[in-house]
Length: 282
Ligand SMILES: [Zn+2]
Image (cartoon, rainbow, N blue to C red; front, side, top):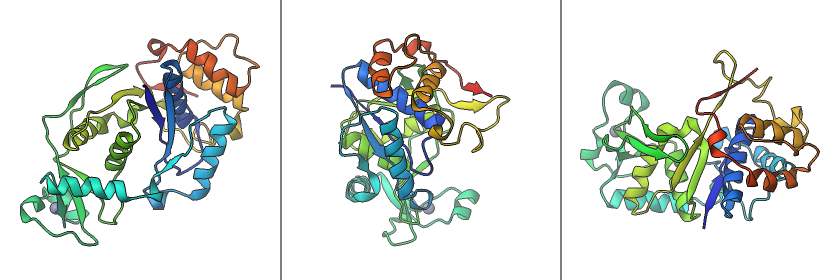
């Protein structure tokens, strides 16, 4: 059975870009007759706030999403990440690294040969294979990622498990069959597929959505579309806006309640209508 997910980082309120990812993941799951889980990726504690986690969940509800309970909140249980790191150290793929950030910039890390014991202040890294640079995206086809680092952080020196590790561990244990997310994560995908292999699991399918950028190539600012979506738009308006940005047919969906829009939009959801490049807005 199809299982997708929407996995925002609660470092702010829900904005246009995150709503676009949520919509893509949700519509894909509804159309496949499967389910879409919600996961809050809040391991990077300094960036995240509990109030944002609450506001994202509330905003998604207002926007008519019905995610199955319970919502997985990463910071509430670190054991699965610790176990995965342990497995990778035992199989000789991961190693303890004592390099400072500055040292890493100046010369490649050679800690793997040293077999250092783990202690506070040291990072855990994974040796990467540069051969793994290609993957197939469900929408974009074969993708080549030119730059793969020779090692990947699994646990930072400040004790925080990395995004890549936690994402793979969670997609695995939640039974996710397809990852729908923004194209900013394309560069991480081959590394994540490699992690699945090392953990003895089959990787899910991947589908990357276009990013929303300001016209002229700028970044979205807090004053415009990076602002909380529900501070600028009524819920139904916000949904119709992202459906249009995804190239979808919104005829007949005006005046429909948020909860009713999604199943109707899913019926006519057309993957091929989504732009193959970033979406520029004013
Ligand atoms: Zn090192």
